[in-house]
Amino acid sequence: MDEECTDRRIGDIGMLNNEVAAWTKRRNENKRKINWKFTKKIADEKMSKSYVS
Image 1 (cartoon, one colour):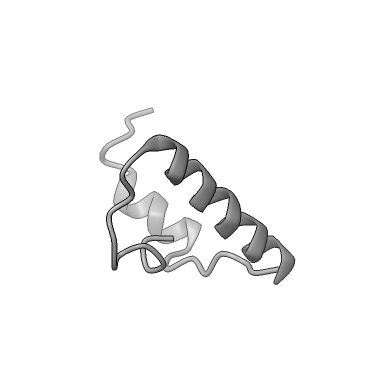
Image 2 (spheres, rainbow, N blue to C red):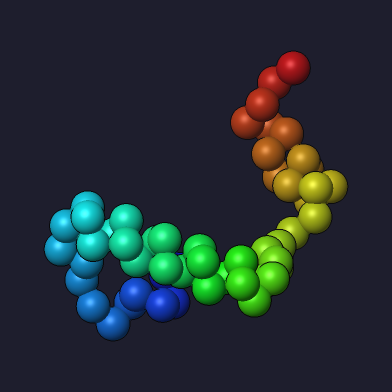
């Protein structure tokens, strides 16, 4: 969503809620999916030192 709103400042929480709701509605109507930039394996490798078991 950051790409859709970088050209302006959202001044209050009400407007932010409206923008997020409209963005979510459009995204769901278009059946858009998340394009992950990493795999679970890569994430586990990078984060393993942060999460000690």
